[in-house]
Structures are given as structure tokens and as C-alpha cells.
Length: 400
Image (tube, rainbow, N blue to C red; front, top):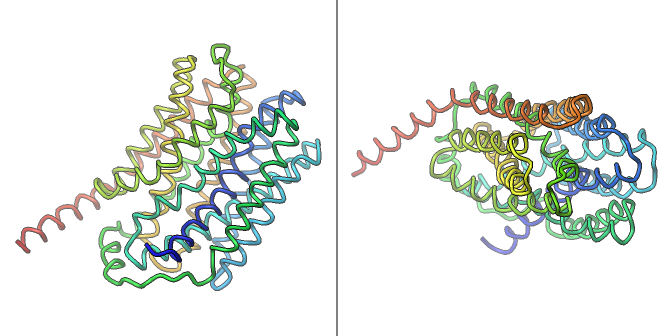
């Protein structure tokens, strides 16, 4: 990979780190710090999280409804700037309503960045027949999560919860400067027709898209309960004797290499088999705190969550890109919207249930069940991968 292509991928990675790892998921480790300061209930915490995910839904719908051909990079840059601003502004108010508005705007920007950056980067990788590099691009959210996990304790201990939001905004601004220097409108990629044909030949038909999209919605509904409340669960577990933010650092550490690992799995077993396996493993990991409240169990749940949630997104988005290889930002928007609907509903339901039952067990079991159901929906796609596998073997025998 030459330097120009590498710098382009790094720019895309950093865009995902700002929009998702920091802008979208920083709320999870800061939430218990804000609750400690203002003592607001789980219901309010769920509403604030859902406001962000409602914005994510609107952003996904907007990218699906409107063609952004020729304007993708400028719109992506504007969305990143607004996203960084909403992160900083969280520290300038104590109003639940204003927090909800800021989280909503942050969600809109996160979705637009995810859809446009995915469409641009995956499209360019397909041109050179290197979609296996998509795992590198999707490391971005994990890098952002790791950055929040290690930096928030420092910001909080020195400047309180306000300092945490401002500090993350400052870090995002530094990354944004690098993005403006590396993420260009016309990156240099050599076209590789052979690569295009190879990838198109291994993709399921477009008629199977509804199964993939609905399964992605189940993933959005299921994963987000852990994604929103895992640090709060650790903080409220008497047997957990560590700084709760360590849990989020574990999520980031395991998320960083996860997309590369699942990309390798997809190359060996196929995308659909890998998706089913990843979602099944995630369902098990989400339910672990229900059966055991030990520190080891919470760390294991966090590690499994980190190792699967972005891997699932990477596998799904890359598979969709192969099924719809050209001008797919609209379909990617619908795909992201299904995910957003699920994750908008999840925190609100979890907040209400946890307040009513005084624990997170019901929410976690429900989330695990939804993810498992999503994995089962994908089984219908195995016949396409099996057919492709038989075709490939026959082709090799014929050649020999």
C-alpha cells in the first residue's frame, strides 16, 4: 500500500474515531460521572442516550433520501466539525433538554459520517480488490473508545465532568486537523477490474438484502444496552473494586483489532457464517453479568462486547457493499437506519426496565435474545455461501 492510499485510510479511520468512538460512545463512560454529580435516574439516562440514537436514525435517513454524489467529502467534513462542537458544548449546560438536543445533533452527524465514510472508503477498496482492508478502516471506533477510556479519568480527576467533555472535544479537534490533511476528495487508487469481479461473484443476490437489514436492526437494539450501561453496571456492582472506566478501556482494546480478525474470518468462512458466529458470541457476552457479578465476569463481558460489536458492523457493511457495489450510499443509509431504530429503542426500554426492577438483568437478557434472533435470521443466507463454495471447488477441479 503506497503512502497516499495509506494516508487516505488513516483519515477514514480517524473520522470514524471522532464520530463514533468519541462523539457517539463517550456518553457511556461519562454517564456515571454525570449521574454522580446530578443524581438523575436511569430513565433520564436512557432518554439522553435515545436522543443521540434518534439523531443517528435521522442522519441515516437523510443520507438514504438525498443523493450526495460529488459532495460527500465536504458534507463529511461539516458533519465532523458539528460533531466536535456538540461534544464540547455538553459541558456548558446542566439542562436535560439542552443535553438531549446536543446528543441528538451528535447522533445526526455520527450517522452521516458513518454512511459517507463507509461508502467512500469501501468503494475505493473495491476498486483495487482489497475489501479485506476494510477491517483497518473499521478500527476507528475502537481507537476512539480506547482513547476515551484512558483520557476521561485524567480529565475528570483534574477538571470534573465538564473537563471530560471539553478534553474529548480538544482531542477530537486535533484528530480533525489530521483528517483535513489526509482525507481528500480524489484519493489515488488504481482501478482493478479483476478485484471487482471477484468480489461481485461471492456476494448473495440483492433479494437477500431485507434479511441482512433486519438482522442489523436486531443488532442495533441488542448491543446498545451493553454499549450504554456497561460502565454504570460496573459502578453499581459491589464486588467490582476497580475504576469503572477501566471497563470501557477494555471495550476499546478488544474493539481495535476485532474488525481485522473478523475480516480474516470472513475470508476463511464467508461473511454470513462469520456474522452468525459473531452475533451468537455477542449474545452470550451480553448475558454474562446476569449469571455472575464478579469482576472477572464484567471484564469478560466487556471484552466480548468490544471484540464483536464493531466486527459485526464491519462484516455487515462490507457484505452490503459487495451486494450493491456501486452508488450504494442510499442503501447504506437504509442499512444504518435499521440499526439506528434498534439502538434508539434499546436505551429507553433498558432505562425504564432497570428502574422498575432495580437491576439490569431483564434488560440484558432481552438484549441477548434480540441479538440471537438476529443471528438466526441470517441462516437463510448460508445457502448462497454454500453454493459459492461448491462453485469455487468445481472451478478448481476443472482447472486442475
